[in-house]
Length: 317
Figure (cartoon, helix red, strand yellow):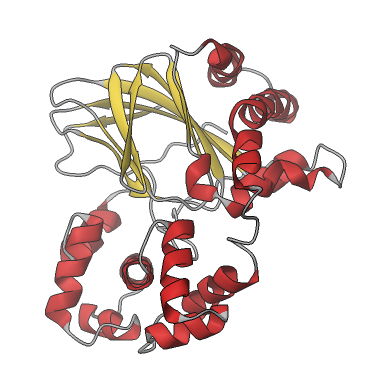
């Protein structure tokens, strides 16, 4: 268990980013499997319970005490004790609680590819929604809906049945996660697929090509013409499709991508802040500082300092 007590400001048990998001600086693999179970208790005045971060793995979050609001790509989800949330890979998220209240939660972070490796090779359709409509795949597992009962029971078992040897626990965890994934698929992911079937091209070659190129060339002086050309769309059509898919206008997305890349460099290098700003596509340091604070909640210097002082992860396995 991790106890976060009397730490000022934002406490993070996870950080960093990968590709288009804040990549955690934590290995979520055990010696035998691509998963990690975190058990966190927060007892302090601050309202922050989970620092802004993301990771390339999926996450099932289960609150056992108190109340929290989980923000996934800035959208709030309110949780009470005994409820949870499914967070797809690579989505930026954080958690807040009421000041003066404590809370306790478990987070099982796992590779979807590892989990589905237990199924037959042609079962890739289970991940279609995660690949195509990732943001919409976030799912609040609230106790008010009867259809969530099986999912919540499996989550409770995952979080409390941890006494087995790691090799045995991995197999049991995989079984419980498959139950969870089946419930998620039946009650949420499959419905997304049906809803989007009329427009299956939204994430196909055009927009995905542009996303890939933006990730490769984010440090360059990109124009709307460049991004639309990668997608082979007119500029107006590109803006419409891009916003429908990602939830962001093209330059808003690019700016977030640059800030996230800068956050990674702040934590993983000793480069000066001005050098990092320039290498991430910002020519104006004042604009960089304002943009960084708006997205990350702290200026670059504060962010780097906080990240370097936090090594508070205790491995359960």
